[in-house]
Length: 353
Ligand SMILES: [Mg+2]
Image (tube, rainbow, N blue to C red; front, top):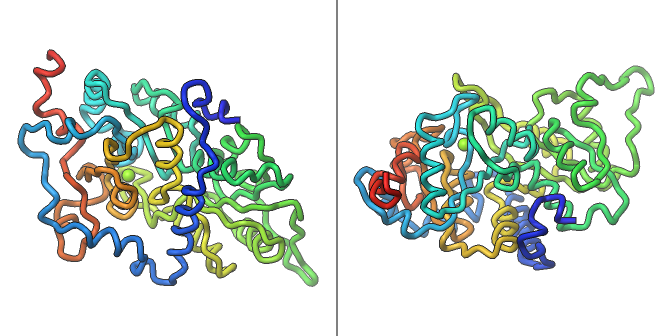
């Protein structure tokens, strides 16, 4: 089955470790507060470091590269902004690979599958294998595999875009909703009611730029009346879906379903540990030698600090240096840099350039 994910031939199975379930349920349980700012994980980990422990990579030094074998890169704000590649990125990625570093891309954007993301990388001139890309659409499918959802003979209702549907197709889990419900309007005349498929056992909610009342009502009935599991790809408040402004993120869709069900979802994207558990178990990686690189404190850097990884905040996306160093911020990376190009300031001699 894991062959579908491209790892079966070169790595060990994603075993029956209860750690992943414990971690995921911990995130879900921790999120039961109505105040996201009081998230116990954020408080526990964020206060373990002080601001003096983060340093800008502003001088040639090899400390970061010497400590890291695997880089996990967020995409938007790190590799590209909207559909514009950030200057110097292809050369930097190539150099990191020449230095023997493994490179993966972990994005909370679920609108594309692995295959869809690979096309975007290719369109931007980046040579990346599908197996190196971990969108939260893939994380949702990985979660269903881990929880043996398919064996229950149920289907998924999707609030989201084609990326989630494509990943469900890869693992053979039937699904309804998604793009095919984008034009639907519920009948709400006298006696009007929406009849839902009783075989829906789970609702996956991700960024859906065509969300409507029909989809919200369908999901509400599946969860409240069918007892379907509520799964969210991520709960990001906003994203840079164009390079001109911030746009409402998947958190707005997730919030709609939370609002009508009173339930908290199981979150599979960052900062949930699901993908790092998947990677470390499948590829036998040492967490201490992995570095998460991102432009968001509350997803990327928290994902790193919560999971025992090194972390670097880059200022090429949504977070400013002022915000990072402000007294209000309690999520502290090991390093920060203007862009990932700064990782290689002292490496010319090492790679023979
Ligand atoms: Mg980002």
